Image 1 (cartoon, rainbow, N blue to C red):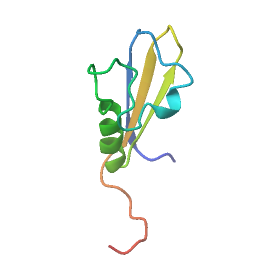
Image 2 (cartoon, rainbow, N blue to C red):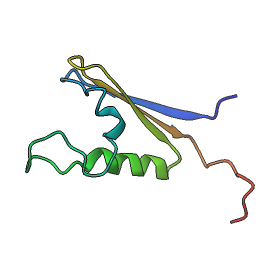
Image 3 (tube, rainbow, N blue to C red):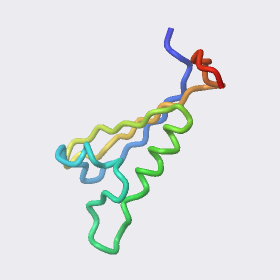
Length: 85
């Protein structure tokens, strides 16, 4: 049985993300905005917070057709891994 989780999808109808950039969008300071228009930290920070809570974030995008981010977070306390604390 799959672990209990909550799934949140956030989609837009913007210009999308080119396939050449998809592998870098969660990197700190990566941005496609003009200099002075963004720091490129938003998705990196979100990625870190989600991972810290045992979740994942992924993206699907087609240039010209927007993007859809899928966030998966576990429900309840994480299951023991067998490692001593």
